[in-house]
Length: 156
Image (cartoon, rainbow, N blue to C red; front, side, top):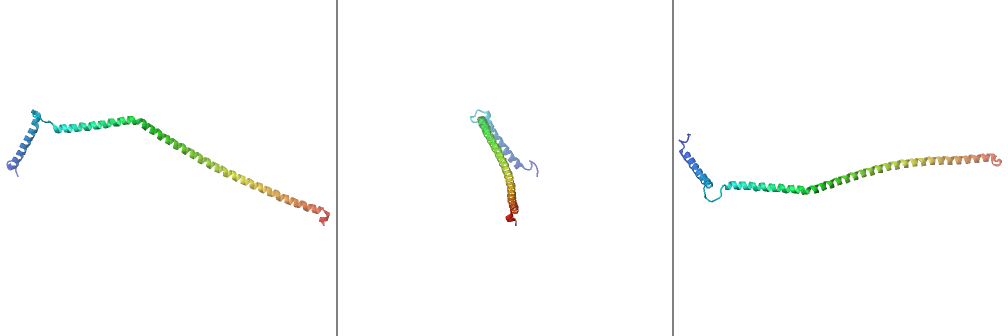
């Protein structure tokens, strides 16, 4: 294959490109060192000003957020108080519901036990009344039999 000596056309092509590049860079850079009117470092300034404007906008947005946070602090505290009040009301309602449910269950149990006791006492009274009635009927029948036996007319 060979080096530069064997490929002169490549060397000539590269030389011309280097020469064109040098002329271009020389022409571009000479305006920075001469008194020709015109902008200097335009690409640099464009990038730099774009960066600075971006930083300014971000800093402004951050300062606006900080001001909003300061003005919204009281509102957020009030929202937290309202949330805590709602939680307190919910807990109070749940406690009241639990108390009322337990009271209703206790009342139902008490009513059931009182009703059971009342019915058993009524049953005992009825049994006692029935025994007294049967005893009264039996005693009056026995008295009638005794009186019939003692009476001479009915004794025969």
